[in-house]
Length: 295
Image (cartoon, rainbow, N blue to C red; front, side):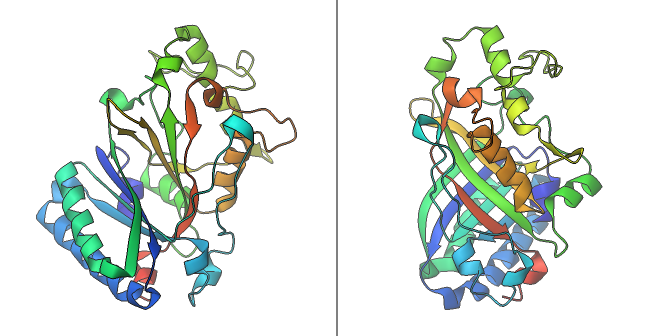
């Protein structure tokens, strides 16, 4: 868990969502998966590999430690029409990231072998870091992320050392995006494309991505820890594998509600109109390593 949060610049990510078929086998599988992680960490320390094992509300709610994640729920649909965020909730999320795809792949094979017939894999997405940490839209991604171990952990973890997790895939229409001028693209994000400078509030479009997601309550920003990466193939579907961690689900949900118009002003993020479409969405809870060994 902490390795995922603290490796801010991992070069590769692997995201697996699955449904649980044999709940009685999950505890032993988690312990074995953690042992496999420790083995690869010791063998390839320079790869800085990390693993999160997270559970959906239905399975987590059946466990004796369920009370440590009181906000956890199944992902609801946000928004409506062509700019909605669909719910594709599953029971289990495996998030692996490191500086080397081979290590990710090796650990994924080992972890899936540990879970065996206890789960049914529903989707697997491979993400990759681009030059200058830019997304496929050409903009630097994750600039608003917290930095430094103390700040990252204070935002990403709750009092039990666990984290609420949002997993979504956003499918980009780059042909459509490229019909917009650089100025219109920058208007959509509220940031300069080349220099990555954030636009001041007085010139920000009210539907820009930053305007919709930079939220404050009682003067305090609702921060999350993003570990998202571009995904896909050059000839087929591609976009952003969006994953975020937070010690409270409220911070994550508030950003989604503002992006998809589920707030008083009803406005939606310009990126949903000009660039991308949410094609999946699920909430999970990732307990600490100690808790995983106590399931």
